[in-house]
Image (cartoon, rainbow, N blue to C red; front, side, top):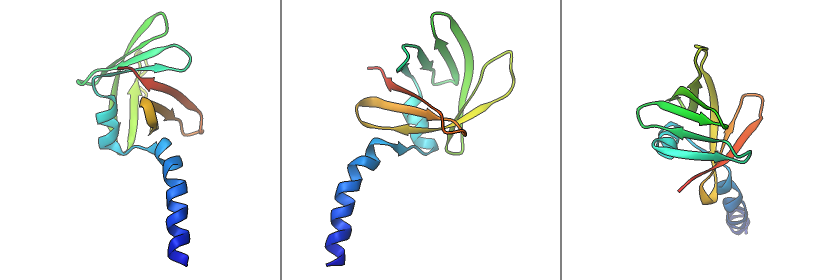
Length: 111
């Protein structure tokens, strides 16, 4: 009886977890490298495979990105301070960057 309950719970919880899956370092690299993300606020960011990133909110800013451990990290000159975020992914190319304070920047990978 307990096994059936555990299986039923896994089937119900599985899709919910899949929509908010935290990515590990390798998955972050695969998800972002060479891609563009359009954020829910209309801005967009390009993640070049060589580590450059371009943020565009009507004015382009050039920065650098990398993966450290299981986090996406970026630096935006003239600052030399790297900021790191957890990355979650969901269905339909949904992706969110999650800061240490829990705030999120949701968006979608563009085709």
